[in-house]
Image (cartoon, rainbow, N blue to C red; front, side, top):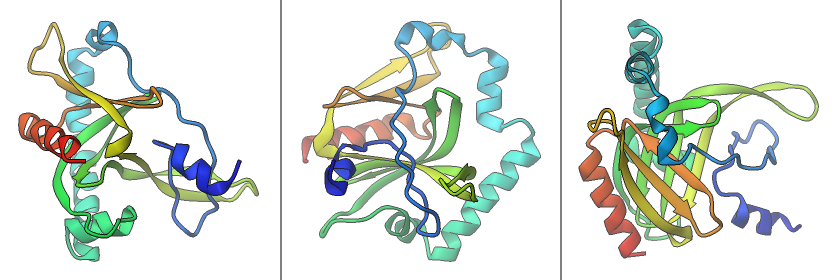
Amino acid sequence: MQPSRIHELAIGTPIISETCEQLQKSVNRYLPNPNTESQYSTATSMQMRLGTKISETVRRKLSLGAKILQVGGIERFFKQFFSLREGERLLKVSQCYLSTTSGPLAGLLFISTDKVAFCSERSMKVFTREGQMCRIHYKVVIPLTKIECINQSASVQKPKQKYMEIVTVDNFDFWFMGVSKYHKTFKYLEQAISQA
C-alpha cells in the first residue's frame, strides 16, 4: 500500500513526533454501544474528572498549559500538532476524555473548519522497531468529510454524564465524554460538519 494511501485511511492512529519513527498501528474501535455506558461507577467518573490524585491532575493541567504558553497560545499549539490546510480556521477547543479500549484518555478536542482532532494531555511511552523508547502524545485526526454522523448520548443512571459519538464513513466510532461546555461544543461540531 502506498504511504499516501495509508495516511488517508489512518484515521485515529497515534501520531508520533518527528524524533521517533512513524508507528503503523491499526485503530482499535472505541467505546461501546450505549448499553455498556452504565459500567462507569461514581468512583470511576470522579477519577475521570480529577485523576487519581488531585495534585496529579493539577500538575498535568499545568504541564499542558505550560506547553500551550511555550508555543504561543492554543491556535499555535493546534498548528504545531496538526497539519493545517490553507484557509483552515480553529473554531472551538474543549477539554474532554477520549474513550479507548484501555480506558479514558484526558486531552483537548479541537474543532476546525476542516477536521476534528484530539490530543492527549500526557505523553505516553512507546517503543520503536529498534527498541528505543520515545514519548508521544496520543492524537486522533478525523477529517470532517470522513464523518458519517455524530450522536449525543447520556448515561441512563446519571443523565448529566453526556457523551458524543463520532462515526466515520469507514465505520469507526470515537466516543468523547466529560466534554467541557458540552452543548456549545456539540453545536460547533454540527456547524462544522454542515459547512464541510
